[in-house]
Amino acid sequence: MAAEQLPPAADSSPQELKLAEVSALPVDRIIDCDIHHDWPSQEALYPYLSEGWREYVLAPTRAGLPSIPLLQTQVCPNPNGATQRPDAFPPGGGAAASDPALVCEQLLDPFRIERGLLTYGQGFFTGATPNPYFACEIARAANDWTVDHWLSDEDDRLYGTIMLAPAQPDVAALELRRLAGHPRMAAGMLMSSGLGKPFGHPVYHPIYETASELDLPLAIHIGGEAAPQQGVSPIGGGMPSFYSEVIAHTPQSMMTHLASLILHGVFEKYRNLRILAVETRLAWVPWFLWSLDTGYKGLRRETPWLNRAPSEYFYEHIRLTTQPLDTAPEPEQLIEILKMFNAKEMICFSSDYPHWDGDERDHVEKQLPAEWHARVFRENARDFFGWSDLPDPQPEPDLQAGVSA
Figure 1: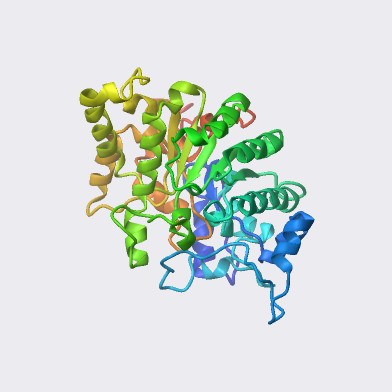
Figure 2: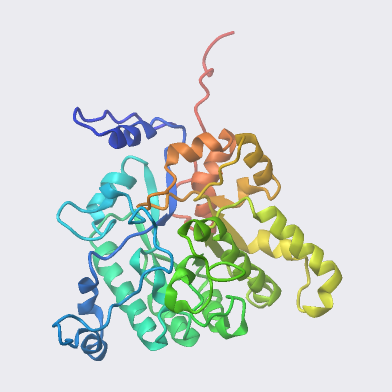
């Protein structure tokens, strides 16, 4: 049953009016799989650092400023000056999406978000930190900060991801185990390959072994490779010059990680492992699967541990988020491509809030067939995360019931 329409306030801005109108759309329970929450400033993490690392960061320079920034910026900055919506910055100051109340006001309430997955903002580049020990400390501090400020007394619709610094896979596995029992930690989060190796490489397998043992899914959010200190190009062929190049070719990183996971036999070794590919577009998937399967037919002696075509592992173990939803010259062209990999059963809605290029719910609804909405906006994510506590979907009412012929 559709939710009632929220009346806009008399002084609502165009953005607020647009969000208010969304509640009249057909799906009234939504799961958002990519909400970039953030700390107000790096000072917010200082109390969560252990004493030694806090001293390392705060040792004053001659100018009296902290000598060590927690994280770096990306190699090609956004020419618009920021990657966040201007209205997502709290009125009292701080980074965009650093105020839980404002996130609820701008996203959860108007979009009817039943459950939202927190995926970090500035923490995006933690895995790319050159010092692997410092990276693990930042991840641990960020996770504890998230628990205290977002998963304790705040809105229970918000669920966290456990930030992992994969340059020390054994430590990352311990961090996964430390927080997996928290009732509102939904997945582990890999954001960049801290060792410069794709995520299927055996060096990362302690992470997958632990996730498999705990039956906890993992998310991969690409883009952290764009940090200048990462030491590898975020796209194929060499270091880009423009932010536009990074945005256009972002899926290349995800293709590399997913091919590595499949071909290294990670899903044969850990058969209940589930991977959510976040913010990576969708139109590349059919070609990617065709290429893997074609190569497997002629080169399977190279990977004798695989017992099925690569695409079969993909369909069983991997799901993808919708944002950024590709824009085709004609809308039906996108749908034809999505049908090629049964996207109705494979993709999960994500807003990418508070990023400037995020996809609002009404935009995604208009681009996808109505018969896909229930699965894309809720049921695929519900099944992926095993959220059996969420109620079953309610059938739409039969408007003709009780009407005599």
